[in-house]
Length: 238
Image (tube, rainbow, N blue to C red):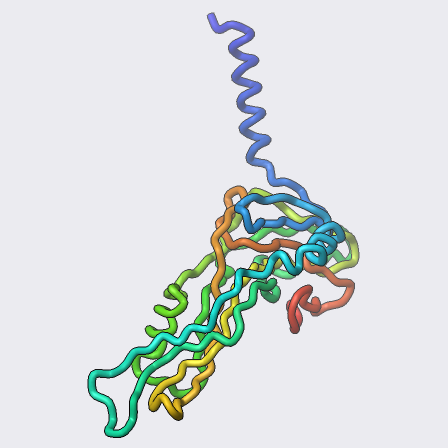
């Protein structure tokens, strides 16, 4: 015979399990903050903006000296000492422009909810302008100690769901913390090298519930007009 206490325990465990699968309902002004220290929290947009203003200086990375890493070919042109050097001109830590993580939804005529969907991607980048010397990308990657080959892909998550007030348009976006390097690859004769500009972006992995993403902000970007203007960056969500 099964005791009443045992049956009650089963019912309680089932209720806890079911509740743990329910998504957390978030308001349009709630922000999911995936912090630099690996923790996460949900705060209001106004509170977040105040924190960002106060911490603007503290969020900057440590000073990163210019790198002049020389790679001298075994055979140099006559009367010309050749090398490949990486020169870092800027090393910034900032909030990236909106990265879409859901379809655009409309609550015109009533309320609406939206969750993160599958297949939205974010990748590290190394962009080099113009023609570059053979082996240049490899030299830049070695100089910055990063392969710049990481990619993150969003998956459907039941961790949370945003609600959109009536008569609005909205989309879930990520605003990742990005470390951005800008500089030049100096190649050829050392007294008059060719200067090839490059830009590199790198992110740090972070999770929230069942979502594996990057450190930064996840929020609802909403507007009374369509298309929706970017919350960070230039452009429109359609």
